[in-house]
Length: 299
Image (cartoon, rainbow, N blue to C red):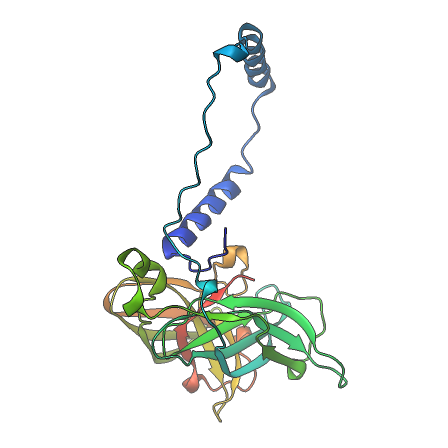
């Protein structure tokens, strides 16, 4: 089956619920030995009593063809490139006291008719004029036509000594352009169209005393209810990107890529996110802080 990264929010939610249920069942006690023994006895009795049917009593049937898929593979479309328009890296400290490297970027779909299924975004390290070393890769979600998307990401490694000045972003895997929505059949629309991203604006930044940090209030205006991944983008006084984070209670969480998920309602809503002081890179101008759709996928 061809790989399809155009996954709906409902499917992502189902995977998260299944993983959460499995996690909660892990600490439960195992089946008592006596019950297990009784169950085994029943299975043994049934197996002894059951006799297989003779071969001449088994009807032969022809193999049925596999049902036709009700979606199509966008990777068969034309290969294109999305744009990484700007990016920046910084070192911060997480809640456990580990130094972490954070990345903020703006990526763009330059095509004005169709969405892009982006290829990988690759974090590479350049040192001593040697070859680039690939550190890790991740995938943005589909980018709507003629749209820029902010991305906040935390590098997974806590063991490698990394200098943010040595890090760069590249894209090494091909991206694919979806068909123009006007050319799609009725049953293909849900796979080939991404809802317009909501408008998001930071309203205020207020200090927090415990824990030390800041609370960002922001306004969201959406045309329809959506489940989005949001990111916080940090800039310095000159507007240069210093890094970014998933906009959530634990931006350093990697469990199912859950960090940063928010549900926004149709119309205008006001939400908030708290930032610990140690999460904010040195030199950040909080008056220039941005919050936007975080289109990060796992990788």
